[in-house]
Length: 248
Ligand code: C8R
Image (cartoon, rainbow, N blue to C red; front, side, top):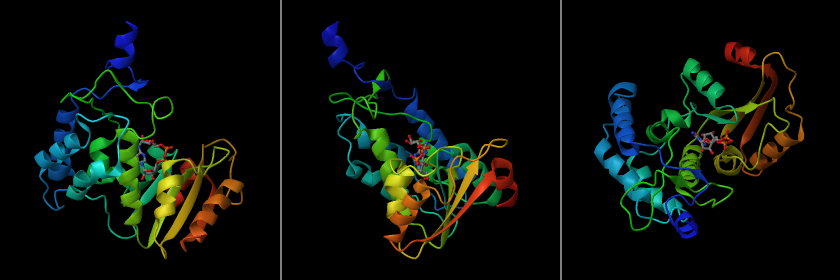
């Protein structure tokens, strides 16, 4: 029992791969390319599915590198038209609602973000299958797991492609609306290009007072990261969810 537990498919502390991963990727890709963005450059969904699988199948699930995802990302780079990007941190649902209403784009509005949203995946050396029993947990097992590295490298490419004015929706009901350990804080903000302008919106839960503001220490930290890169910064705070969706 001991040996099976620690050497077997169940040894990781995170939930396993999503059932029917390949089928979901293929179906989402078909929907995206045919229905959601039919105007976009025609893309080969079979090749994209295969590149996704080759990135991690048969590999040690704790040894993911950015390079593992190169061929996949090159088939569908997460770029969006100038000035339309929306970043977020701890505000996923709200940022998506905002982007939808304003015809702006989050990473989930690009093909690879759309394909992977909410899914989990990892493989196992010596096997051509996904491990559906368990996958490495970021804290308890390893940070260089395929899921974390995927969002990091995709977010990095998304941020690098930003131009003109872009926005980030931050959670003003948290004590630190800006979290320097989040993907937005670690990967996206530090990869914005000089001359880009970032507009931060601090949005708190309707009916409660905000817990952080543009003059708080977490936003000053964000400002200093951006100053170092010559990224312009504007910040709007004290907006409830309803005010933000209606007025911004
Ligand atoms: N981004 C990052 N992570 C994403 C994601 C995405 O678009 N989409 C999903 N589903 N995830 P958080 P953050 C998953 O603390 O760390 C981009 C990942 O498992 O609320 O600052 C996006 O462009 C990830 O660990 O936000 C956005 O701007 C959590 O959800 C930031 O990065 C996100 O946890 C958001 O990342």
